[in-house]
Length: 421
Image (cartoon, rainbow, N blue to C red; front, side, top):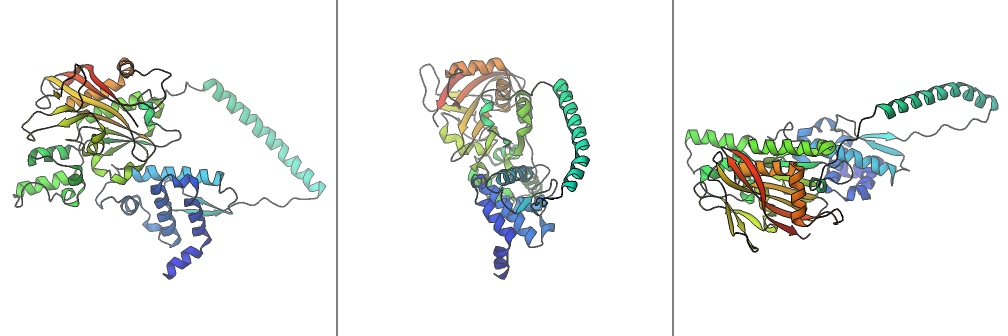
């Protein structure tokens, strides 16, 4: 209690409270929590505890065993925090006597007094002496600046291309990242081994994360090793790698704003802000369950591992089928289906793009489809979108692909739907 009173009486903490109450910080509860946590530890003399791993566990609720190499969410949010601090001190906080800074490569908060201008000198001789000393350097700096500017003018390259529609709907103004959530291959294998469907609630439960929900109540030594491996490793599919590669290529200069995450590392609170790309269907990426009730084309399956998966057309239009079955298994030849869906983020700013195939061939085909300018034009025409159509436009499209020995080919549009926000 005494420590809390000391903290509240500290001018530096009072500054933190003003900052977190300002408009730039009202947009994100996560950024506010991050700043308060880092500042509190710093002011209590516990800066040595401010590691990326500890922040991830304390602020983002990540498990103790999570890998900071594979999960960059802490670094991404700290970069956003630096931008919000600049925004505050350029606006509401421009008259503050203290400035809060977070040095690059560190997670401590530094409090720096604002430099005060030196008092004016009335002496004419002093002013003349200063002017005599400053003018040559000013002219030299002006010459150097002009030279550099001219060099850049002649040497600058063409601006990096921006992401085309519909990917452009993911990128909001500023530097906010777009998080690409790839499928959890271990989740898919678990479903097959268990021979039963799993839900997002099951996937998020501690018992599943610890491997306690896998197999039977009395596992063999071999099953125990398998449980440990499935619950502790992060694996994805070749199709997801192809999709990510195509996204990076087609997004051009905005590709550096894509952050790759595993479905295993995501939490429901992460979906409160920003834009996301989910790769895979509910049987490989359970986060798609979160948005499935907004979709007309929904993945269905009978007996896990034994029945063909198919897309259920909830409201068939004239000429459409009620069911669209896919391949019997990944690696075979035949017809497979996928959907590409663009949805608004619930209760927040941003968009969600879902690329899901019945098998890996379908998911791969969805990524290839979006990367092709001709296909994007056909999609816009099928949806009735023109250059004068107000943006953003939310939709889902069912695509058909012919797979040959595991490779998708000859992709076409089977059906489309517009989604109202």
